[in-house]
Amino acid sequence: MKKKLLLLLLLCGLTAQKSIAQAPKWVEKAKRAVFSVITYDADDKMMNTGNGFFVAEDGTALSDYGLFKGAKRAVAINSEGTQMPVEYILGANELYDVVKFRVAITGKKVAALTVAPTPVETGTQVYLLPYSTQKDRTYTAGTVKETDKIESTYTYYTLSLPLKDKMVSCPVMNADGQVLGLAQKASGKDTTSICYAVAADYAVAQQITALSFSDRTLLDIGIKKALPDTEEQALVYLYMTSSKLTSEEYMALLDQMLTQYPHSSDSYMRRATTQLYISQEPASMEKVEADMNKALDEAAKKDDVYYNRAKMIYGYCLEHKDAEPYKDWNYDRALEEVRKALAIEELPLYTQLEGDILFAKQDYAGALACYEKLNTTNLASAATFFSAAKTKELMKAPSEEVLALMDSCVNFFVKPYGAQAAPYLLERAQVRMNADQARGAMQDYDDYFAAVGGQVNDLFYYYREQAGLKSRQYQRALDDIAKAIELNPNELTYRAEQAVVNIRVGRYEEAVKQLHDALAIDASYSEAYRLMGIAQVQLKQSKEACESFAKAKELGDPNVDALIEKHCK
Image (cartoon, rainbow, N blue to C red):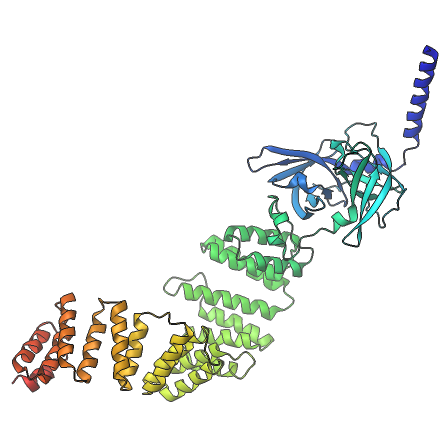
């Protein structure tokens, strides 16, 4: 019996030796690409441990998503005990439990597996390589039991192969030493002889896109995400995130962008703009200037950079009108930059900025020439005609010329007017009042009221009341001024205006009452006494009128002397 037992042990030993001896030649080298992963939470406490493997010599690796979900940081530890922090998440899919990431490596490349270019068929022998720090590394062999498709392109394997917990996310290899997939534990009853593997090429295909910022799968990993694989997509990603991050967070993303794409002219300009917003201390401004210069050096289209530099300096000047500027950051420098852009290509956008800068310099003739030129291009808009109108107004051009430009401005919109047209309607109403077109102004005020859904303040009612009074629409004027008082009862100007309208329509006693109401708010309001005296004259109350005029004079009303001369001598 002992001899039989000894013989059995010898046979087992020979079988094991044969198994090791027959191991594919690539096993020893391939196992250097397998590593252990440790993830940590926000408090830097260890969360999970697991496995992964490299698929590129730059440190790109694959593992299971569940290991990383909720993690704030992670490290990979290779078979030699070297710790490599996970630098970026490159993509993830929670449904198939895969994550792609890159570790930070110093100098030398890492050992990496080659991803199999084609899947294998049912019945093919495969090999699972576990993570190990031992010299006598082993492997587990099995076969492909079934295959299914993922997204009609990739393969999901069912394997006749036992899998221990510590083998999850280890690589499953083909006979040529290429990685087929990541091992995944079976969830059914037969967990001792069955496991699964999601195709490695599917995991490698995971990526960060321009829309990944809002991807919940990625957001649930607290480790920094890489930018998209192309500069164009990365720039879109920056745009998508710009309104969702703090300035400091966005600055860090721009630093990352320029590390990944060091020749991105647009990114240098964005970083300069963000730095300018964060801080305008001299040291910060030096960084802004350096990035602006670097953007110009890297740009293929120099005029675009000149334009953006001009725009940045112009915005800075508007913000610091009364302060000492940084170096030569003034309107002249902004004008010089935009004219460099125009010298390369005369784009309407550049012409508009030139006009805006000249307007800020109060060179209205120069600004008007730019706006008039702009209004002959495809960039003409309500805003450009409005700019021309305001410039002419400041040049004291005839009201009819200003109004013609405002008509062109409003003509960009159609009735019923919406909120975009509203500010231009309000401006045209004022221009029409200046041109003695009160009825037209009333129409603009009515259109404005409709455009904003009736959401107006007391000042609107005051302005429309004046148009109503001037166009002899007295009841509307009275209604509007009453509404203004309702919204702002302590504004004495409105109460005086209400009295003026009532005097105009012969309601003298009502005017006197309203002026008493005004004086109850402020007894030193001289205009109220003057207007009361006018109403009292019409009521044949000469004594009371002269007393009111005298009180107005006592309170310093400069307009009452002629009334005293006429009625109180």
